[in-house]
Image 1: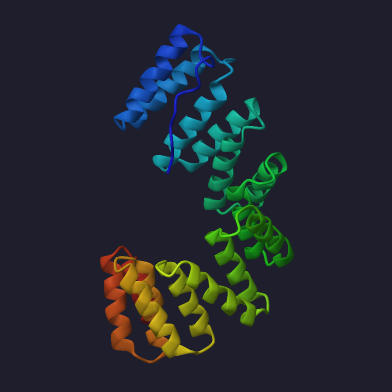
Image 2 (image 1 turned 90 degrees about the horizontal axis):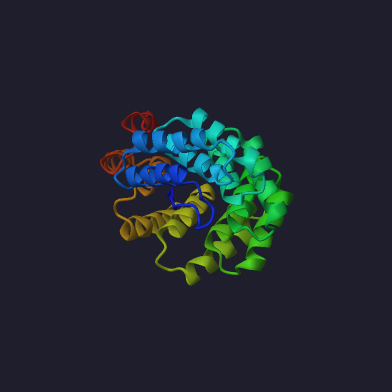
Length: 265
């Protein structure tokens, strides 16, 4: 979720600049994105060297992202960082956008820069570990997950990442022990049952997998992903009719019909 907040008191001194920024945020409050961006840009044109402009570049970038203008948002974030290269929140915004745009290398650089400035920044550590894992750099991914768990011993996202990493990295027994333990800590978290179900399906333990995916659906009956996961399991179990039923439920809750049709081919 994107959060907008006015610059702190003392950061804005020019009365015209202040008025334009205020108008921009009033427009944001009413979800008038085009008007908001116009006012914020006008404020920066009025005072191009204002010390708070890096904040306005961030908000403009967020507005552009909400409108689907990813390239323009990236330019805004970069402009803001050129004014304040150590502004972590802006660096995280740009890193996340790079990642969504498929530029994992640039995202990795930004997350690493954040960690250099704030070694205990969990958001950056989580994302860097995820990227390293996708690159099969399991050693570095493991180091980041371990760093998070030293900061927050029960961080669920870090544990999930580490479990999936272990399952891919030749440690299947350890991974299963870890997911079992995590479910004991968080017995009402549907995602954990879905993850364990996927691990059991990979091991061809179909009945166990089905029990876990049934539990995931029971806990979150409107989660399309869980129906998709159970449909793939039913296909492995050669229960095509049940798989079709689950793809229809997945579509009902937001899954892409074309992807569901492709799954059943």
